[in-house]
Image (tube, rainbow, N blue to C red; front, side):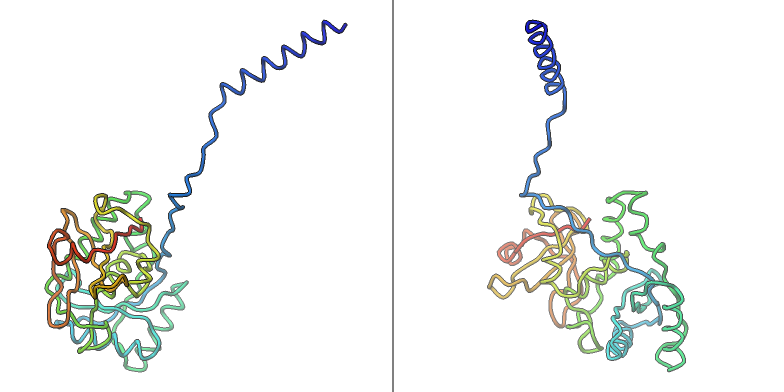
Length: 253
């Protein structure tokens, strides 16, 4: 009887050993690669205005901001500057707000941009590369637009982080407004692994504090709003000035 029990025990141990060897090894979580955070997606947005000059679009943006309405302007495909504002959870809420502003003579005609209208809504279908190309296209549309510090008025229009925020929001991603927040919200990406649509950050003032940001468009080039009195343009990460002040890259896709 005892001999039979020993045989059974040996058989059980043999089966357990075989099962343990054939099972896939457990995956060790590498803490050096944090889980990728996703930017919040844009909801319903109001689009208004059609201006030949960026200054006029910036002026409407300023008027809306004085009413505590987040707003930004952009260069549309037809060559005109238009304004988008708000981030509403449903279409009716957006429509009511737009109608109220129209009744108050703040805006004239308006258009409601739906979440499904954004490039972000097609990311799952077409992939990240599709979104990256769209971000680059949006950034390129701003080349030649006057740099206007602050993004708020005819005198203060686009600053560097206002440009990056606008490019991402136009494609459906609610990127934070300020460069330091943008830096914190992204996932670290090495300079040699930058992809189109990633953001590149700089410490322009010589200290470690983030003070400038641009949009990477490939081949070590980026689009940015450089400084007051200059237009939005393309520069190289390899230039002595920007290479010395490069503070890091961030990805959001």
